[in-house]
Image (cartoon, rainbow, N blue to C red; front, side, top):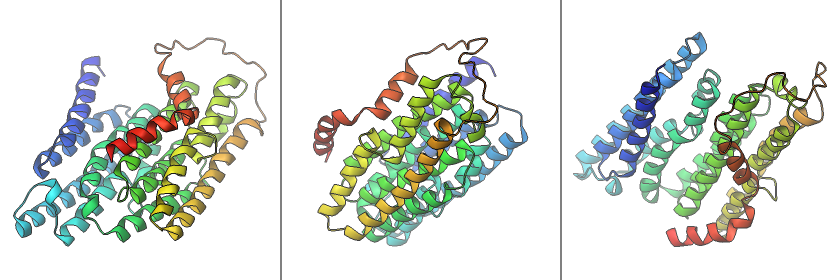
Amino acid sequence: MPAILYFMFYASLGLGTSLTFLSSHWLTAWMGLELTTLAILPLMAQHHHPRASEATTKYLLVQASATGLLLFATILNGWMEMSWSINEMKNPYALTLAMSALALKLGLAPFHLWLPEVMQGLDLLTGLILSTWQKLAPFALLMQISQAMPPALLTILGLSSATLAAWGGLNQTQLRKIMAYSSTAHLGWSVIIIQFSPGLALMALGIYILMTMAAFLTMKDMSSTKISTFSTSWSKSPEKMVAMILILLSLGGLPPMTGFTIKWLILEELTKQDMYTPATLIVMAALISLYFYARLSYFTIISLFPGTSNIKTYWRQKNIKDKLILPIATTAAIFLLPLMPLTLALTYFYN
């Protein structure tokens, strides 16, 4: 694919997300969502492979269904309330339909089953875009309507996402499917706290994006897409594999990693709101998620593949053009805990 086409598609992704961010009208927000969907489809189908074509078709059908449902919800609200403003969606039926549509777009449970299948058919760079950048626009709309949503619905949606994603990732051997379930679980933490502290939910999304970026870039650098090939990478680059293990444990929320920071703050806020039962349930779901991250770390470092070579360097080194993004993302994903006072100050300023 020519470079000018890549530039056009990436620029369209940025334009669509920015248009949704700046929108106060449902129609312009809907246009931004459509633009981001159409821009990522060629990136998904660029590899002429049956799995890539299947993933692209599934993604198109799911996003078209979600967008159609969202458009129907906005039309219903405009008809009943005579308003097309995002902040003035008050009709309960329109709110429920819009919430379902955004949950389908984000891959929240119980609308998350399409995400692992689509992720499995993509290359790692496109999977990174799908797991991070494509979450921003729907999440921005979700933040704007969350204060009008029933708190019980958001709590159930967050708990089901964290729990079902944790159970779904237990027996997976494909790294892209594990990252898909990780996406659903982390968004569950953001959704459960968005009604009480939107700034904290936004910080949770930002930390998740940092950790996911570090994980995907490391997998791409090691050319690993499943556990069996991942375990053979230890003899080739032990430093990167140690960093990857720390990233996985950070995704699981193990202290003193970066991922522990946001879970600690969310649990603190839930207890302040006297939501002890949801806090207990989501911690139990986090323990299940931590188990499959620890299991992946175990297969990576402790039980080496039987055919592992003792040669620790490639015969021909890869030509890595950009050597800054991976170490910066890895450092942020692991050692961001000392900056917690600054992030707390920014969160309280936002709220």
